[in-house]
Amino acid sequence: MRVLVVGNGGREHALVWKIKQSPQVDELFCAPGNAGIEALATGVPLSATDVDGLVRFVSENQIDLTVIGPEASLLAGVVDALEAEGHLVFGPNRQAAQVEGSKRFAKELMESYGIPTGRYRSFDDSSEALRYIREQGAPIVIKADGLAAGKGVVVARTLQEATDAVHHIMEERAFGDAGTEIVVEEFLEGQEMSLMAFVDGETVVPMVPAQDHKPVFNGDQGPNTGGMGAYSPVPQIPDSIVHRAVTEILEPMVKGMAQSGLSYRGVLYAGLMITADGPKVIEFNARFGDPETQVVLPRLESDLVDVLLAVAQGHLSKTAVVWKKEAACCVVVASGGYPGSYEKGKPIEGLSAIDGESVLFHAGTARKNGAIVTAGGRVLGVTAWGADLKQARTRAYDRAETIRFEGAHYRTDIGSRAIDSK
Image (cartoon, rainbow, N blue to C red; front, side, top):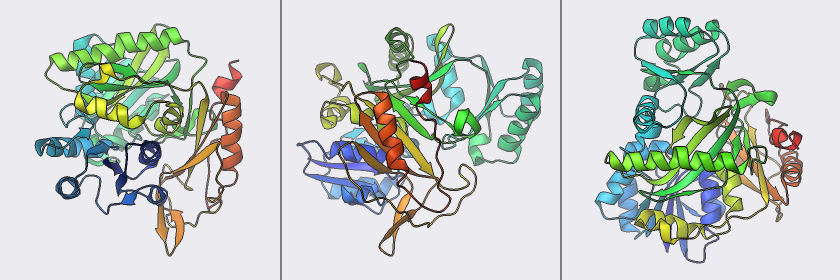
């Protein structure tokens, strides 16, 4: 097979790494890729949202399967354009991907299908939003309606923080057009859990759960990021809760979308809060999570290509998906200043060591004059695995300590909640 992965981040590096292990794959490409992916796949100098260019490349190079990584590609219509030309592609079409593209759209679907989530109101007028926020009080959650690279969510602990968030998103346009409309949500208390599932339009096959760490600093302090690390499994959340999330959230969502004429094929990601009343949806994403993918895929025993094909071809119910018992932990090493402004082009040291217990997933890297340099806010996902979380976490941090570049920083408490709960 000839396979193309679309995207250039840590999630795409993890996908390429896992797809490369399949005996079915003869040639592997990535558009546009990064400095780490280039060791495993042939880079294609096309933007992940260059719809015409990607369709042309797939046609001219007889690509058997295209795997879409980022949400921007889905919402640009890459899947729609490829399917229109008869190409096999993994990922939901643009209409179905609106579950991530619009927070309001996702909330309305959840309301229609009776899926547990927090109370909400959407606004396109900042003064009306502020009036509602004052009525509700704090804490309260403010979200840009559109795509904001995982950073368009503010958990406001005070009314002043909520007011500042509305001004920042709607008036200062910190996230551009994504902030034309906002969703104001009830604050939910509990532990978060990320639960992804393979979906072929009808069949839902859950992956192993993971827990992400969004705030930039230890102890969940500071502004939200795209994710500073993750781990899997999540032992402090019982299997019964995971089962409830599948039967009360994922399966009804997919069934409801099908009844509404939305054929959802790809990964459905549920960001959940485990409350005293059970799991409730914080958000849905239309693709593999980042950095959750970096800890979930190392735990996949099955051939990923078999699963991707089953989803794309609509026969997931006939495909076994088997998981390893071992644990995985990912620590994100970020650029100085992230998630705010940061400099690029910093030379990275400590990349060469290779072992059978860890892997460096490149997220924001590039090659410059033969050297690998920083090229994004989240630079590397240092992922390790072991017999249990404690061992995986120790190995990940041992490896993270070897990475050096000017301004590098990372959280030192990834996975500690699970370790401390024992």
